[in-house]
Amino acid sequence: MMARILRILAGGTVAASLAFPQAPSSRPSPGAANALSPPPDQNAGEVIGPDNLIYSVADLDRSVAFYRDTLGLELTSQVGRAAGLPAPAPLNEALSDLTGTHGAKFRAATFELPGAGFGLELTEFTGIEKKAGEARTYDPGAAMLVLTVRDVDAVLSSVRKAGGRIVTAGGEPVNLAGRNGGGRRFVFVRDPDGVLIELSQPYPLPSTTAALGSQVIGGRFGLTVEDTEKTLNFYHRVFGFESKPGAAFAANSVVQNGVGATGAQFRNSSATLPGGAVTWELVESRNIDRKPFRLRVPDPGAPAFSLGVRDADALAARVQAEGGSVVSRSGGLDKKPGIFVRDPNGFLIELIQRPVY
Image 1 (spheres, rainbow, N blue to C red):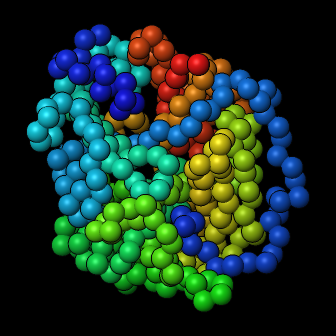
Image 2 (tube, rainbow, N blue to C red):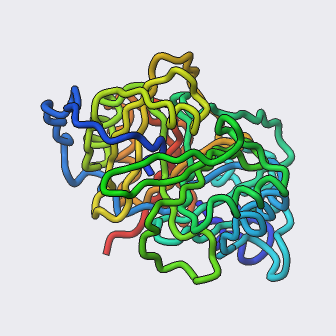
Image 3 (cartoon, rainbow, N blue to C red):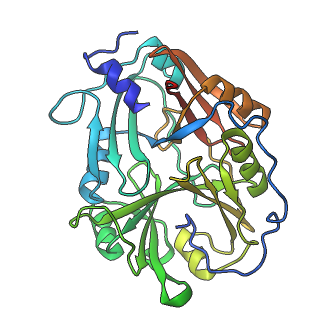
């Protein structure tokens, strides 16, 4: 969404870790033996690649200060003035249709996530009614930004000083040992809008392209799902993701404390976007009271992920055929359709149609 809005607003006013680290398990996945159903047409819609992980925020200035000054992420673009953050600008009809925000004003900013293969986009809508919401780590539809950091204690200290809230039981990082002497220390926190962020320090630290002075050296995306098999089949059949079902459900006290879910069991799976550059980490929880998490595009705390595609209409039709839904659409953005859809967990996906060369 950011790239198109930047072009439209260039002249001023708008014209028209595993997300849940899990102890190693040798038990087979209950769905591993079942081959995923092939997509109806491997080429229809064709996902080109990832764009941004998007979060709607209540106050862009506050959120930018958190991600830039507290977490140390690099601000890469913004809509509006060259100096400072932008002033809210009215949305045109096409963008209002796409976001379901007629009468709203809008501004946004994006951050680089080292090594992630996608950016972080923060969007702010004002002048309309909104309803903020917060997901728990185990609620279907909950999205998580996973940041790999050099020193989790130092980053957590900065989060505390900024007034951030800690989700992890006891308020301190937990240690999850892995194989061959490796492992990670991690902690879950919330940003000013309640967005879930996992701060993860692996040992040993992986190689990175991040600047030497950057605490954040990597980024990933995690999504809590209602049903693993249903979700993996959806993303495989609709978008052509390569899916890897996880091991059987397991309970681990370190993970339970880390994600603030006492007594729960977890199953971790993954789905890799076409091209293999980005892998989503999918988590299903059980033995705990789950509630679906579903917000509208402009609601503070609402997550979404934008994908570049060849044919947004073809993919939207497939989304509906495979159990998802179409939320909103517009055909007036650079004369190419933009469409918001939901997966079976209620998670928002923005389809950005790009030209075919």
